[in-house]
Image 1 (cartoon, one colour):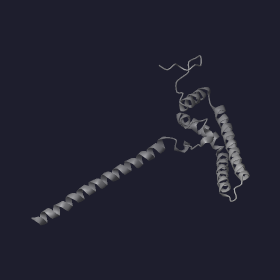
Image 2 (spheres, rainbow, N blue to C red):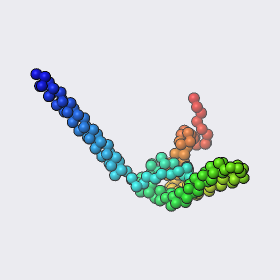
Image 3 (cartoon, rainbow, N blue to C red):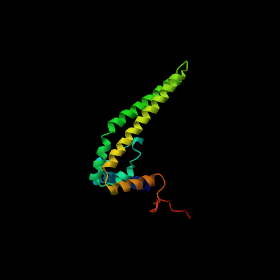
Image 4 (cartoon, helix red, strand yellow):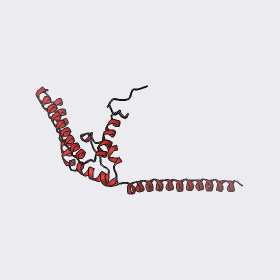
Length: 173
């Protein structure tokens, strides 16, 4: 009798392990399929990662544009990508220069000052470059798209309430 009980226990465990493995495989295939469907259904190539140099054009605004229009606007931004990359690389190099100056023995305040000023200048150039790219994007927008951009900027900055025709903010209760 113990031989019969011993042989049914492993069969029961094996059956449940197989069921769990099949369920796990099905769930993994479902997740992969959902990811592929999302990529194919949306404009996967239209996704773009922007750094702080493009703070004036929120990602949410870009996601609200239709695929063709988003591609046109992103083409303007992509035209600046190489410049942005080089400026970010220069800013990182200035950080390393500052770190080297801080570790130098003997300490040289002039070297630290030069590194900080170099970083600030690079950051300023990056911000100016981002501002110029934002102006090119804004120039390419329709009147309705400019209104949508304004709404997105207000919403992002925590001023999501619409202003009245006089331009004043509604009073809080």
